[in-house]
Length: 265
Ligand code: DC
Image: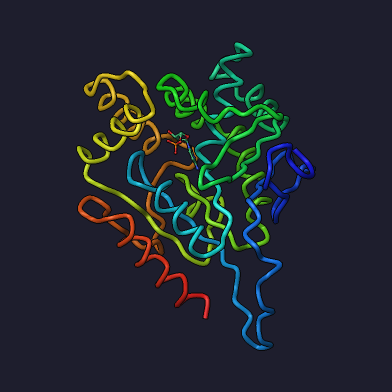
Protein backbone atom coordinates (compact mmCIF):
# COMPACT_ATOMS: atom_id res chain seq x y z
CA UNK A 1 0.00 0.00 0.00
CA UNK A 2 2.87 2.35 -0.61
CA UNK A 3 2.87 5.10 -3.21
CA UNK A 4 0.08 6.09 -5.57
CA UNK A 5 -2.92 3.81 -5.70
CA UNK A 6 -4.16 2.41 -8.97
CA UNK A 7 -7.43 4.17 -8.28
CA UNK A 8 -7.52 7.70 -9.56
CA UNK A 9 -7.07 10.51 -7.09
CA UNK A 10 -5.69 8.52 -4.20
CA UNK A 11 -2.48 9.86 -2.83
CA UNK A 12 -0.24 9.16 0.06
CA UNK A 13 -0.70 11.47 3.02
CA UNK A 14 0.53 11.93 6.54
CA UNK A 15 0.75 9.02 8.94
CA UNK A 16 1.36 6.44 6.24
CA UNK A 17 3.97 4.26 7.81
CA UNK A 18 4.28 0.81 6.30
CA UNK A 19 7.16 0.04 8.63
CA UNK A 20 4.63 -0.38 11.38
CA UNK A 21 2.10 -2.21 9.26
CA UNK A 22 -0.39 0.64 9.28
CA UNK A 23 -1.30 3.46 6.96
CA UNK A 24 -3.80 6.18 6.37
CA UNK A 25 -4.36 7.85 3.04
CA UNK A 26 -6.61 10.64 2.07
CA UNK A 27 -7.72 11.93 -1.27
CA UNK A 28 -5.79 15.04 -2.22
CA UNK A 29 -7.88 18.08 -1.36
CA UNK A 30 -6.08 20.75 -3.34
CA UNK A 31 -3.75 21.60 -0.47
CA UNK A 32 -1.03 22.71 -2.89
CA UNK A 33 -3.35 25.55 -3.99
CA UNK A 34 -3.86 26.83 -0.47
CA UNK A 35 -2.28 30.18 0.45
CA UNK A 36 0.64 29.91 2.86
CA UNK A 37 -0.41 30.64 6.43
CA UNK A 38 0.76 34.07 7.70
CA UNK A 39 3.69 33.77 10.11
CA UNK A 40 2.66 33.56 13.77
CA UNK A 41 -0.69 31.94 12.98
CA UNK A 42 0.32 28.33 13.30
CA UNK A 43 -2.73 26.16 13.80
CA UNK A 44 -2.09 23.27 16.12
CA UNK A 45 -2.73 19.75 14.86
CA UNK A 46 -4.40 18.13 17.82
CA UNK A 47 -5.05 14.54 18.80
CA UNK A 48 -8.74 13.93 19.35
CA UNK A 49 -10.24 10.85 21.02
CA UNK A 50 -13.84 9.75 20.53
CA UNK A 51 -14.94 6.79 22.63
CA UNK A 52 -18.32 5.26 23.28
CA UNK A 53 -20.50 2.17 22.78
CA UNK A 54 -21.76 0.73 19.47
CA UNK A 55 -24.27 2.80 17.57
CA UNK A 56 -23.58 6.02 19.49
CA UNK A 57 -22.66 7.75 16.21
CA UNK A 58 -18.88 7.84 16.68
CA UNK A 59 -18.04 6.98 13.07
CA UNK A 60 -20.52 9.38 11.52
CA UNK A 61 -19.53 12.39 13.62
CA UNK A 62 -15.85 11.40 13.68
CA UNK A 63 -15.68 11.32 9.91
CA UNK A 64 -17.60 14.57 9.54
CA UNK A 65 -15.44 16.31 12.14
CA UNK A 66 -12.25 15.06 10.45
CA UNK A 67 -13.45 16.41 7.11
CA UNK A 68 -14.29 19.76 8.64
CA UNK A 69 -10.94 20.12 10.41
CA UNK A 70 -8.86 18.56 7.63
CA UNK A 71 -7.78 15.84 10.06
CA UNK A 72 -7.12 12.16 9.49
CA UNK A 73 -9.81 9.84 10.83
CA UNK A 74 -8.93 6.44 12.24
CA UNK A 75 -11.60 3.85 12.99
CA UNK A 76 -9.82 1.61 15.52
CA UNK A 77 -12.83 -0.75 15.65
CA UNK A 78 -12.09 -1.60 12.02
CA UNK A 79 -8.61 -2.69 13.12
CA UNK A 80 -10.06 -5.17 15.65
CA UNK A 81 -12.48 -6.32 12.96
CA UNK A 82 -9.57 -6.87 10.52
CA UNK A 83 -7.82 -9.12 13.03
CA UNK A 84 -11.12 -10.94 13.67
CA UNK A 85 -11.57 -11.60 9.96
CA UNK A 86 -8.10 -13.14 9.66
CA UNK A 87 -8.67 -15.14 12.88
CA UNK A 88 -11.75 -16.64 11.30
CA UNK A 89 -10.03 -17.37 7.98
CA UNK A 90 -6.97 -18.93 9.61
CA UNK A 91 -8.94 -20.88 12.19
CA UNK A 92 -7.05 -19.33 15.12
CA UNK A 93 -8.65 -19.74 18.53
CA UNK A 94 -10.01 -16.42 19.89
CA UNK A 95 -8.60 -17.50 23.27
CA UNK A 96 -5.03 -17.97 22.00
CA UNK A 97 -3.66 -14.55 22.87
CA UNK A 98 -0.10 -15.23 21.81
CA UNK A 99 -1.27 -16.29 18.31
CA UNK A 100 -3.58 -13.26 18.20
CA UNK A 101 -0.79 -10.89 19.14
CA UNK A 102 1.53 -12.40 16.54
CA UNK A 103 -1.17 -12.17 13.89
CA UNK A 104 -2.13 -8.58 14.77
CA UNK A 105 1.51 -7.45 14.69
CA UNK A 106 2.01 -9.02 11.27
CA UNK A 107 -0.97 -7.40 9.54
CA UNK A 108 -0.69 -4.37 7.31
CA UNK A 109 -3.91 -2.47 7.99
CA UNK A 110 -4.55 0.75 6.11
CA UNK A 111 -7.37 3.20 5.48
CA UNK A 112 -8.06 4.95 2.20
CA UNK A 113 -10.65 7.72 2.09
CA UNK A 114 -12.21 8.52 -1.26
CA UNK A 115 -15.42 10.41 -1.96
CA UNK A 116 -16.19 10.45 1.78
CA UNK A 117 -16.05 6.66 1.90
CA UNK A 118 -13.33 5.04 3.96
CA UNK A 119 -12.06 1.71 2.68
CA UNK A 120 -10.22 -0.66 4.96
CA UNK A 121 -7.37 -2.68 3.48
CA UNK A 122 -5.61 -5.61 5.08
CA UNK A 123 -2.43 -6.78 3.37
CA UNK A 124 -3.61 -5.12 0.17
CA UNK A 125 -7.11 -6.63 0.17
CA UNK A 126 -10.18 -4.38 0.43
CA UNK A 127 -12.05 -5.87 3.40
CA UNK A 128 -14.44 -2.95 3.99
CA UNK A 129 -17.57 -5.06 3.51
CA UNK A 130 -16.24 -8.34 4.85
CA UNK A 131 -15.60 -6.93 8.33
CA UNK A 132 -19.16 -5.61 8.80
CA UNK A 133 -21.00 -8.89 9.29
CA UNK A 134 -22.63 -9.77 12.65
CA UNK A 135 -20.25 -12.71 12.99
CA UNK A 136 -17.18 -10.48 12.67
CA UNK A 137 -18.74 -7.96 15.09
CA UNK A 138 -19.03 -10.71 17.72
CA UNK A 139 -15.57 -12.08 17.00
CA UNK A 140 -13.97 -8.61 17.13
CA UNK A 141 -15.53 -8.02 20.53
CA UNK A 142 -14.38 -11.45 21.69
CA UNK A 143 -10.71 -11.13 20.64
CA UNK A 144 -10.57 -7.54 21.91
CA UNK A 145 -10.61 -8.77 25.49
CA UNK A 146 -7.14 -10.27 25.04
CA UNK A 147 -4.19 -8.26 26.31
CA UNK A 148 -1.68 -9.15 23.56
CA UNK A 149 -3.90 -8.16 20.66
CA UNK A 150 -4.74 -4.88 22.42
CA UNK A 151 -1.05 -4.11 22.90
CA UNK A 152 -0.26 -4.83 19.24
CA UNK A 153 -3.11 -2.68 17.89
CA UNK A 154 -2.56 0.03 20.53
CA UNK A 155 1.06 0.33 19.36
CA UNK A 156 -0.07 0.76 15.74
CA UNK A 157 -2.66 3.35 16.76
CA UNK A 158 -0.05 5.39 18.65
CA UNK A 159 2.18 5.40 15.57
CA UNK A 160 -0.72 6.45 13.37
CA UNK A 161 -1.64 9.32 15.67
CA UNK A 162 1.89 10.41 16.57
CA UNK A 163 1.91 13.41 14.25
CA UNK A 164 -1.35 14.91 15.54
CA UNK A 165 -4.08 16.27 13.27
CA UNK A 166 -5.92 13.05 13.89
CA UNK A 167 -9.23 11.77 15.24
CA UNK A 168 -9.20 8.26 16.66
CA UNK A 169 -12.48 6.57 17.39
CA UNK A 170 -12.87 3.48 19.57
CA UNK A 171 -13.38 2.23 23.12
CA UNK A 172 -10.09 2.94 24.91
CA UNK A 173 -8.56 5.86 23.02
CA UNK A 174 -8.95 8.50 25.75
CA UNK A 175 -8.22 6.08 28.59
CA UNK A 176 -5.38 3.86 27.33
CA UNK A 177 -4.12 4.55 23.80
CA UNK A 178 -3.90 8.35 24.08
CA UNK A 179 -4.52 9.23 27.75
CA UNK A 180 -2.87 12.57 26.97
CA UNK A 181 -5.11 13.35 23.95
CA UNK A 182 -5.73 17.09 23.52
CA UNK A 183 -9.50 16.69 23.33
CA UNK A 184 -11.58 13.72 24.50
CA UNK A 185 -15.21 13.04 23.75
CA UNK A 186 -17.40 10.26 25.08
CA UNK A 187 -20.34 9.81 22.76
CA UNK A 188 -23.39 7.87 23.91
CA UNK A 189 -27.10 7.51 23.09
CA UNK A 190 -30.09 5.71 24.58
CA UNK A 191 -29.91 1.98 24.02
CA UNK A 192 -33.05 1.73 21.83
CA UNK A 193 -31.79 4.50 19.58
CA UNK A 194 -28.39 2.83 19.20
CA UNK A 195 -30.06 -0.46 18.22
CA UNK A 196 -32.32 1.35 15.76
CA UNK A 197 -29.31 3.03 14.12
CA UNK A 198 -27.35 -0.20 13.87
CA UNK A 199 -30.35 -2.03 12.39
CA UNK A 200 -30.95 0.78 9.89
CA UNK A 201 -27.29 0.78 8.86
CA UNK A 202 -27.33 -2.95 8.09
CA UNK A 203 -30.64 -2.80 6.21
CA UNK A 204 -29.53 0.21 4.14
CA UNK A 205 -26.48 -1.75 3.03
CA UNK A 206 -28.75 -4.54 1.83
CA UNK A 207 -28.11 -6.81 4.80
CA UNK A 208 -30.80 -9.17 6.07
CA UNK A 209 -31.13 -9.04 9.80
CA UNK A 210 -33.80 -9.43 12.47
CA UNK A 211 -34.30 -6.43 14.76
CA UNK A 212 -34.38 -8.59 17.91
CA UNK A 213 -31.07 -10.20 16.93
CA UNK A 214 -29.46 -6.83 16.28
CA UNK A 215 -30.56 -5.74 19.73
CA UNK A 216 -29.27 -8.89 21.46
CA UNK A 217 -25.94 -8.63 19.66
CA UNK A 218 -25.44 -4.97 20.50
CA UNK A 219 -26.39 -5.40 24.17
CA UNK A 220 -24.08 -8.41 24.55
CA UNK A 221 -21.20 -6.70 22.76
CA UNK A 222 -21.48 -3.55 24.86
CA UNK A 223 -21.57 -5.66 28.01
CA UNK A 224 -18.41 -7.51 26.93
CA UNK A 225 -16.62 -4.30 25.93
CA UNK A 226 -17.47 -2.61 29.25
CA UNK A 227 -16.69 -5.55 31.52
CA UNK A 228 -13.47 -7.00 30.14
CA UNK A 229 -10.36 -6.85 32.31
CA UNK A 230 -8.04 -5.09 29.84
CA UNK A 231 -8.97 -1.58 28.67
CA UNK A 232 -12.73 -1.80 29.24
CA UNK A 233 -14.91 0.83 27.61
CA UNK A 234 -15.39 3.68 30.06
CA UNK A 235 -15.48 7.43 29.97
CA UNK A 236 -12.12 9.07 30.69
CA UNK A 237 -12.45 11.47 33.66
CA UNK A 238 -11.52 14.39 31.44
CA UNK A 239 -13.70 13.41 28.47
CA UNK A 240 -16.67 15.53 27.50
CA UNK A 241 -19.87 13.48 27.57
CA UNK A 242 -22.19 14.00 24.59
CA UNK A 243 -25.61 12.35 24.35
CA UNK A 244 -26.45 12.00 20.65
CA UNK A 245 -29.98 10.57 21.14
CA UNK A 246 -32.06 13.56 20.07
CA UNK A 247 -29.42 15.55 18.24
CA UNK A 248 -28.45 15.87 14.59
CA UNK A 249 -25.00 15.00 13.28
CA UNK A 250 -24.48 18.65 12.22
CA UNK A 251 -25.30 19.93 15.69
CA UNK A 252 -22.87 17.56 17.39
CA UNK A 253 -20.08 18.19 14.89
CA UNK A 254 -20.60 21.93 15.35
CA UNK A 255 -20.23 21.60 19.12
CA UNK A 256 -17.16 19.39 18.82
CA UNK A 257 -15.49 21.70 16.28
CA UNK A 258 -16.04 24.65 18.63
CA UNK A 259 -14.40 22.80 21.50
CA UNK A 260 -11.47 21.68 19.36
CA UNK A 261 -10.92 25.18 18.01
CA UNK A 262 -10.99 26.69 21.50
CA UNK A 263 -8.44 24.11 22.63
CA UNK A 264 -6.15 24.70 19.63
CA UNK A 265 -5.73 28.42 20.25
O1 DC B 1 -16.39 0.15 16.77
P1 DC B 1 -16.71 -1.25 16.31
O2 DC B 1 -18.10 -1.66 16.65
O3 DC B 1 -16.42 -1.44 14.85
O4 DC B 1 -15.69 -2.19 17.11
C1 DC B 1 -15.72 -3.60 17.01
C2 DC B 1 -15.22 -4.21 18.31
O5 DC B 1 -13.84 -3.92 18.48
C3 DC B 1 -15.90 -3.70 19.57
O6 DC B 1 -17.00 -4.50 19.93
C4 DC B 1 -14.83 -3.74 20.61
C5 DC B 1 -13.53 -3.70 19.85
N1 DC B 1 -12.81 -2.42 20.01
C6 DC B 1 -12.01 -2.28 21.11
O7 DC B 1 -11.96 -3.16 21.96
N2 DC B 1 -11.25 -1.15 21.24
C7 DC B 1 -11.30 -0.17 20.33
N3 DC B 1 -10.54 0.92 20.50
C8 DC B 1 -12.16 -0.28 19.22
C9 DC B 1 -12.91 -1.43 19.09
